[in-house]
Image (cartoon, rainbow, N blue to C red):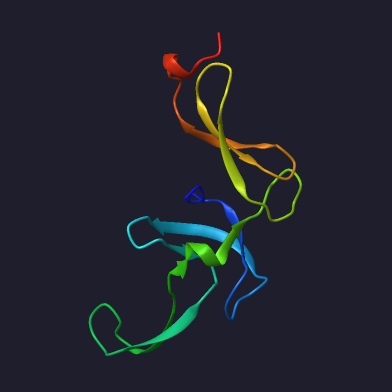
Length: 115
């Protein structure tokens, strides 16, 4: 699961297909992500001190990670992500379409350095 919090993703399956938005939260155990303005449902809330008016609240529900695809910032298109080690030995994500760096995953390790 190379998609991380803050990434821009596009929904590729479901009712919100084609929607591009930002990832808010990821649950790696369940394999789901919470995406802004995607999979919104109404929660009926009873009156309480927290919600004095009560009524219907619009809430985002988690989306399966297999239904999301990373949108590359460099090429602006949806693409798969890969991993590789840099010359210094740090592990990074990269776009498989345009070969652009998508961020570092782990810090430098001497065992993986190519020097």
